[in-house]
Image 1 (cartoon, rainbow, N blue to C red):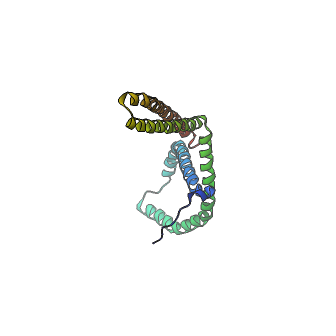
Image 2 (cartoon, rainbow, N blue to C red):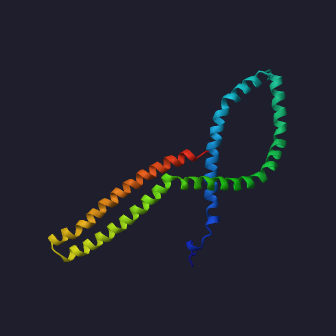
Image 3 (cartoon, rainbow, N blue to C red):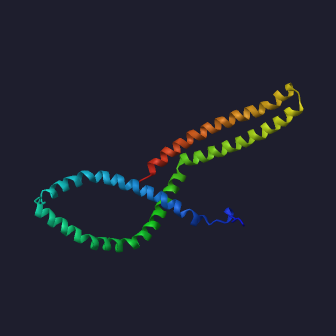
Amino acid sequence: MAKAQFDIKNIDLTVATKPLYAGVGVADLAIEAVRDYAADVQKKLTDVRGDFKSFDLSANGLRTQATARVNELPTKAQKYLGENVATVTDAYGDLIVRGEGLVKRIRNQESTKATVKSARTTTAKAKTTKTQATKATKSTAKSTKKTAAKKSAPAKRSAKATGTAAKKTATSAASATTDAAAKVGD
């Protein structure tokens, strides 16, 4: 059976990232909605208390109100569905734009740029450490203990520098994450 080939080099990133941006937009919109909802809860509770006083709580009154509301449901559901089918397509596009905007704001913040730069430095140092460790290992196999100790010193220093760079990257990433969290739901 032939295996399907996946050519990652020829992917259209504008198409491939749309679902990601839509997901980010959904999360951002949800957080905004929760914030707005929490601000309106107290007002709505007051309104509900006022409306509750106007209900007829007798058995006949409750039955009449329930019947009227049940009879309205199919019509309301049909109307709601009809109005919102077209809105879903527009909303998806809006969520893509919203998510893409949030991702751009996060990418352009200074803490994110510092994290990217720090990660590149860490990667370069890790490659240097690997190269030096490989050379030291090959050299150790061919030489005496005294010579091996001298040749492995650069690899040790490089490994220490890589560890330090990785710690700085982690600190920078934590700062970028905190800054990004503040942008969500704006």
